[in-house]
Image (cartoon, rainbow, N blue to C red; front, side, top):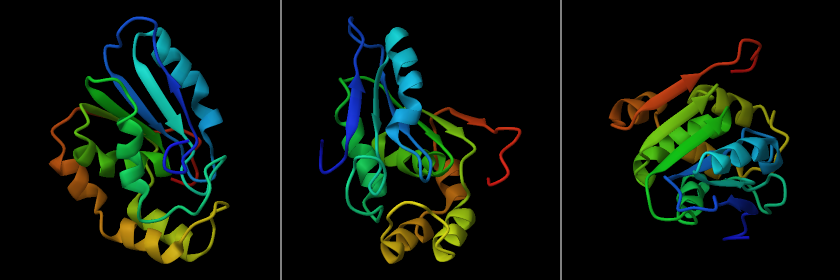
Amino acid sequence: MRDGLAYTLWLPKEDPAGGVVILHGAGSSKESHQDYARAARAAGIAAVVFDQRGHGKSGGALDHRALGDVATMASLLPPGPVALRGSSMGGWMALCAAAGVGAAAVVAICPAPSEGLLRGLRANAFSFEADAPALEGLVSSHDLETAVSALEAPILFLHAEGDEQV
């Protein structure tokens, strides 16, 4: 645990070529991304995967600290370039946190749009514990298009054919 966040750190046997912070989507958990972390380690890349607040084994509620939590997890990786890889809500977080973390690359899988996150939050449609006013403030204060436009790091966008929500 680090700052109340449950995580697993995957380190290759040799010095890693870099590291990746893996961000799950709304209502998911770190266990859903262990295979990716394992593959990264096998490729010589350190990986950290964590339960966001209000998810899995991390306590509390998802709130205004979410992007700072990405930086906290990045600090657990060995020195070197850091990439962020997120899906759905985690894709939004990866894109919005990238500049603050100094990410060398971002992979956004079906990244949730800010409007979609706000709509779900306001409709109480999420299955995780959230501090709605604080999380709404965070999402409202980060325009996704502006965040993406400002990034100088390479970005890979992926979208799932059957994704009905994003």
